[in-house]
Length: 132
Image (cartoon, rainbow, N blue to C red; front, side, top):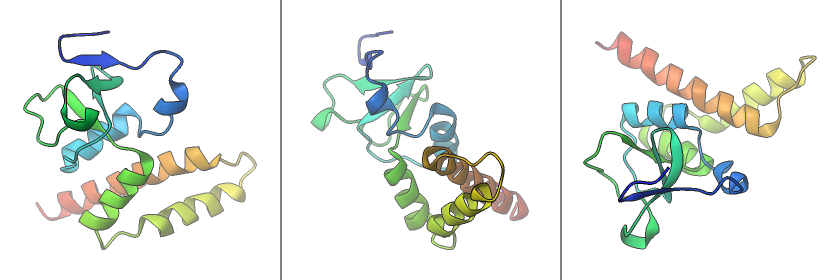
């Protein structure tokens, strides 16, 4: 799908796409306040890039709510560490990897990263609800 300012990645760009948090996690992070420059962005749940943007990336503070910044996994973990320093993402990831290693159906490292980010979002949303 393409519009005037957005171009999706080609279907064979799965290797690139796998480096980025999936749409639902990226949207949840945006709702928590994630608003940093990223290499790619989501538009209508498709990952791609904004044409003619500075350095080819997605600028922060996009004025269009339908665009969702697509952080890499390392960028997502760094953002949690820097903005919610009371949460240790590494410890969460080790806990999830250890828990899955003891199960009959262990997760891959990538699945554990995804589960860890989902858990961090859940923890932050719970804490925000408690402080309302």
